[in-house]
Image 1 (cartoon, rainbow, N blue to C red):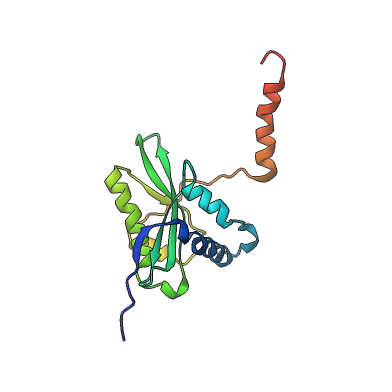
Image 2: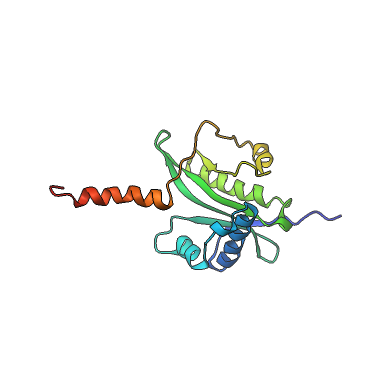
Length: 173
């Protein structure tokens, strides 16, 4: 029995975008929400490679340089620590590449970026039923149960935003 080939991790390139978008859609399918995923190659290309990118990405590639996994991330900032950190938006490894170390290497790459740049945190969210919880615990990640997530979207987001416009439209403002 031969051991699996350990993938190489590198920053995402423009030619990787179609594969990453396909994997994002695979992730949405896995998370039982395929109808909620609307990402296009144009959107991801613009986010990663536009004039002022605020999203960053790394891919795990096989021996033919074909992406088999990805990590999409952006910077956050801790006012208490006074430094940036990395928020991992999505991490995904295709089923055929699981067990090769791709996921661990993607996370290790982001951890190295944090260490090299003086960031203190690498954070992410995970759906509560995901079996990756055991893997995350094995690398020393801690579940942050005391913090409760909140989200504004859709009508609630639009309604709250409209309040600013309503105040700005008042006389004497």
